[in-house]
Amino acid sequence: QNGFINLIQARHPLLQCPVVPININLGKAFNILVITGPNTGGKTVTLKTVGILTLMAQCGLHIPVAEGSEVPVFKKIFCDIGDEQSIEQNLSTFSSHMKYIVQILREADSESLVLLDELGAGTDPTEGAALGMAVLDFLRKKEINVIATTHHDSLKTYAYLTKGVCNARVEFDEETLKPTFEISIGLPGKSCAFIIAQKLGLAPEVVSRAQSFLSREKIKADNLIEKIEEDRKLIEKEKNLIEAAKEESIEIRDKLEKELNKIEENKKEIILKTYRETEKILKETQNRTEKI
Image (cartoon, rainbow, N blue to C red; front, side, top):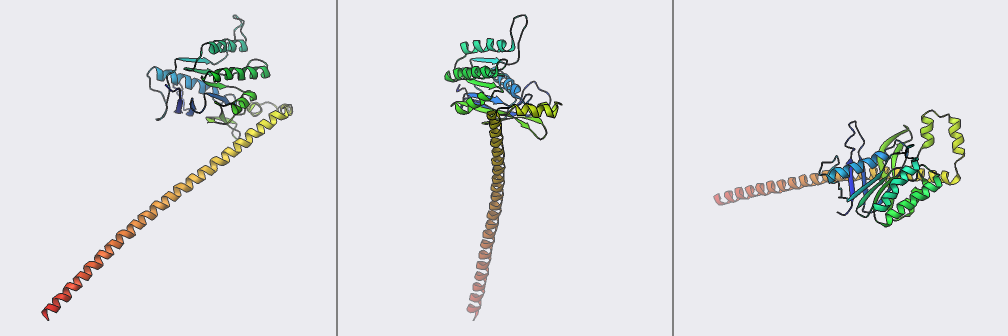
């Protein structure tokens, strides 16, 4: 009833192949989660997983999550996922998205869950990003739980600067050039378009030329994200070292306590043995004295 989603080790119930489980939460520290990162990284699957598991839970079905997970009951669940452009209905990609978003803004309330895929896509990037921010801000003011995916840098900045909104990223291993399908909450992601394009065979000179067209602001933003990621990995490494040292300290402490207990037991045994020997000597002395 509190609208708090906390999915631990969640898996999409329809995927039969081995999958990477995700951890995702929403509704406590923030009501809106903006997920960014490369294509094929798992953004849309995350939306679908949250939506399907929420519906399953509301139907009384067991859901594939770890112990401790929480799923609220929503009165309404809205989603705009996929591209439903239509020549017959005269709908472009942008129009098909806007058709659903108009309905969502009209009908969603604080007891709703809203899932938006590729928010602001299908039109001029600047205008699309501005519309995306306005949509999220409208939903934020109505205290509606929202998970949205996007590639727009402006939406990452909006999530960073706005209370109640949080960034998340789908992880991408730049060494293997493969997505890891893990979700990291609190950090914006990179689209990695150049890396993926080169991996798919785009000529290096074309990729290099494309990089030269990037604005300084975009380069600074990407460098900042890389710096944050490096710092995060360093902190994670230090944290693991501290945890390992802590565990080692606990093991040493336990070992010392056992040794001390053993010494204490030996001490008691020695004292008891000495007492008994002394008592025996005293009795023998007393007996000899009485005979004399």
